[in-house]
Image 1: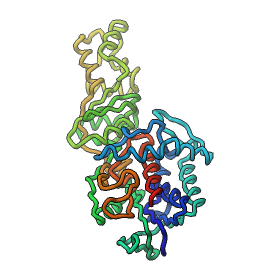
Image 2: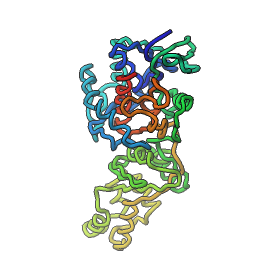
Image 3: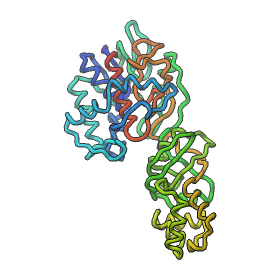
Image 4: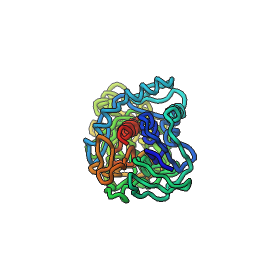
Length: 393
């Protein structure tokens, strides 16, 4: 079989690239080893797909080459994707912090992308494994379990290593290395922390499922203000996931459990106004009763406020406002939303996504060393990079 473009990977970036290239009149074959396209799309956003973010800008992305993402994001913006969503009549809403979610199900977004592929004439082949890739006279030759394919342009949209149960693999990195590319070290990003210190672990286990609203979590000069969630293994929730992308083993993280309060002043004020109130009762007004009891048990002596000295209240305020801990590690790729690192973008054109090592070879989406923050940014990178490559592939 001969075609103009082969896209390997029918996820967000691959689907976008395939139908955009086909709309230009290119013959496009889209291949995926999975039995269903867009599996990550379907599970994202709790099944409602946080498909972009109103406030997308280059500062929301991590890369060893921070300027790389600018061109693609400028040429295919969040507004462009929102226009397509609206044109297909997919109802959506802003949840918070600019995050856009489907009103119904993530399958609305996947259905829209598949409709675009069908309308553009994309040849989608699922459950098709690529066995070998070689250079050909005018492009590339692929051996698949469905036969041999030659193409002028080859797009690698195979994603990273996160959530292997959905079929994630290192295939894209293998292809990159085969054609002379540097692959920067990879690790799990947007991932929960694990805790092994006995006392703290027992508290996390006891509070598993408890969420604390509006915390400020900091690590290595980066801070995120969002919810945190206690789990059986440690800590999760949006603020934890965000900061995990900046964390290295052995680093401490700091959590302000109540960033909206000047705690020392507030505690002193409560002591004057309600001197007979027990500390754990007071904390029960800020957290769940169970969490207040455990904090009092693990961190403080719970007694009436009038029995606490001014210095004790300052120390309590500092503990709640600057809880410092060193995670044992992360839950790894098993639950990570993204993979940090990947194909070195210094060897890829930021305008076209084309390899600077092997003409006609393109890399899009998460396989590249570009990772977004939580909240729809990674999808916007998938749309933008897939669109950029499709203009040239």
